[in-house]
Length: 192
Image 1 (cartoon, helix red, strand yellow):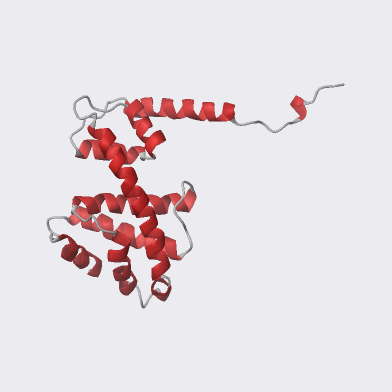
Image 2 (tube, rainbow, N blue to C red):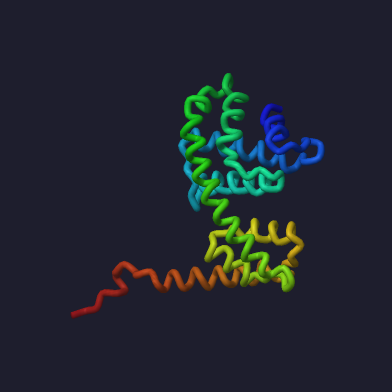
């Protein structure tokens, strides 16, 4: 597969030794490429969130392979070449796709550095749902990525992290709703 061959070339590692990382990167970047060609842009909702997660997970696995350079620049042209016959629109939009995915990748790499640094502070004590909420709320670090990164780094994750995290999220939602002004309605009308 040309994308995997390109990953082997860029990383200096073999597919046999890095099967999971290379598969995740190749599959996720292909999916992200097609979403971007269809006009989807990274966002926190719906299709945009799917695109964001695909790019971020590919970047995370690329770091495991020692790939620090812009994945979109390195791999989207290969994705376009692979699908050129069946999907010529990918080749037509390759520059736009690279720009969209690169922008998301750069933003995520900054977030990732901050989040990993924060996680490292808990190497000895482990992380709880409260710390995972701080990573999510302050740094925009997805909770799934936080737990994955903690475990990968040998940092213990509390058995009750999910319940703690969800409680903090619910409290945040409640605070947000209280702070949001309500539009006037029939219940707000007073007789004169």
